[in-house]
Image 1 (spheres, helix red, strand yellow):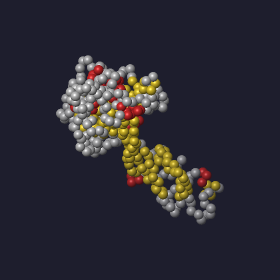
Image 2: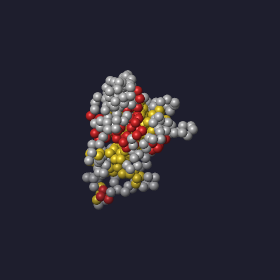
Image 3: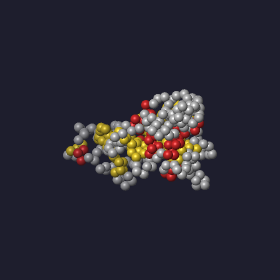
Image 4: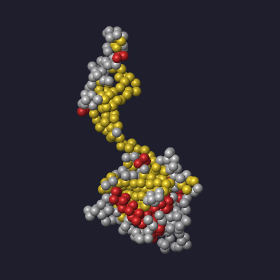
Length: 382
């Protein structure tokens, strides 16, 4: 217990903020269901409520499993797909409204705003049919680092569930220039626009200039949620982004005459038909099995208070430790003429009423005499 105290001045206390980043690569083999038992993915969990699907990095019943993300779909009440016969139609509309309410907010009339393609919340293009990826806080930490988000999707038109290995038709989705052009008009914090580029000429209908792309979704950095439009999986003939010569069902049809990208070869459904007639879990399966990989870097914001604890020449040269003296003689002095000395091993930070609040230990004792001075830098992180 300290018997003497030194008051820290305002100049001895400084504040600092540090951002730490960690790379998070997620391969499509994990997302598609690496662990199979009786042809069922044991690291992909469906629920009886059927509102979303969860993906883990290991069989979810294992204590070693870590939650990666949830995936679900939503349809706006204003969408052309919204109708009375849509399977789980009420739930899909509710999910869209819930996500839009949290991420986009309300307009002046109190109505829920739809997801806006360019982020200006004006009367431009909207994402009315969307798939949502809600990433685990374990991965996102405080936020997704801006400008690092990337997803690769296969748009091979056959609908086979082996899309992770397909290389001929791949869409690359990125938050291009997210570090400088992010938006701040969301109640959920900052977000960026996701742009799609293609790994192969002809996959997208409109050729892209260098460092450009088509808006295809939004990434909410602090919330850790990615929103993608279903137009990613439709040809231009159906109002989507894919090339008019890309179709997998009705393969004998000429380009631009109704061919479509089949989301599931077992059902021969395009993305609009799939959203209309499939359950939410079934739609999540179809989107998830086209996902090849996800990459982003997370951010941990570290706030610090730094205390500069200064020991001047005439300070802290004695110790209150009972073992410091032997028969009233200082143990560390060999002769009477030697200067007093102490060995600093610990720094204690005390409150206004001299109550001990924090303790910092030195890696090795520091010898303190009237002939030297020390400044010990103590940092508290929170």
